[in-house]
Image (cartoon, rainbow, N blue to C red; front, side, top):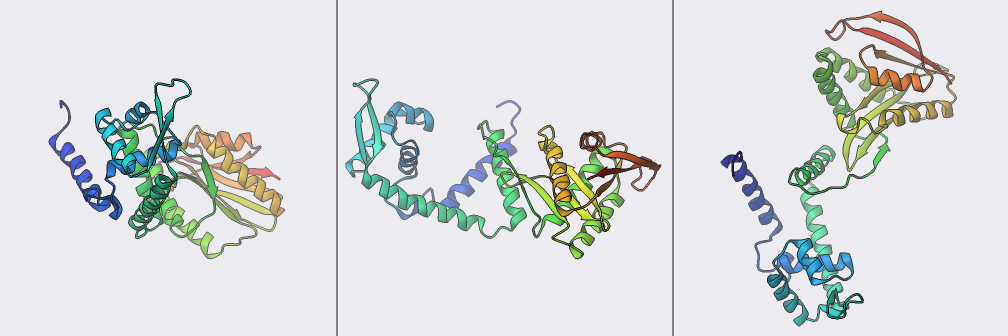
Length: 307
């Protein structure tokens, strides 16, 4: 097709060959069963839907209706399907799995779940997040309407500190031209946070959606009655969702819960979106001073909030 290179076509076909081979989809029976991949997919749809018209399944699976009819016949001959007249049209039939069909599919589904878990198990946390993100992106790119899950907040765990440092370095370099000195500063702050971590007085919130990192913020102990908000970051994919405000909400709530009387933060005059969030929470600008720590000659700002 015009505009599609042979290299792109070959790469997609190569992935298809790799994945079908890993799943054993080319074997006569899928997952060491007597059923083909197409038969198992029909059973899956019937299990998920409860019952369906043959035309509905043909449309959902984008499958030739004559071929689907032959699949029905094979499954019916094994006592796995049942049909009944449709309430809307007595001339039409609705197809469902029998008790035997449901039991057969349950065994196949358990095997498929175990197979998928075995493929994912060797990956570490970051590898799994990258895989999930790549799978979602591939589906969206090829026209599948993938519904995004909710944004969830969690605490830090192994691997997060390196990722947060990396994303700060990459995003601020791309969006503001800050050099590697900023990334080094972030690495130092987070290293001290882990080394001196006080669970009762400090906390990190990491935002994820479907396992994909979307942002973070840290509340760190500054003094006897003072907390410091640090490392607020919202990924481009989550901007406009209110995530930045939610992260700062969590910091303020936790600081008050801990009994802090004041919260402070340092930011940069170029970070307009963050500044608007701080203003909306009642922070006041205390002072400004020029600095050239990251190679752009910008202005540092100190903000405070009475709790």
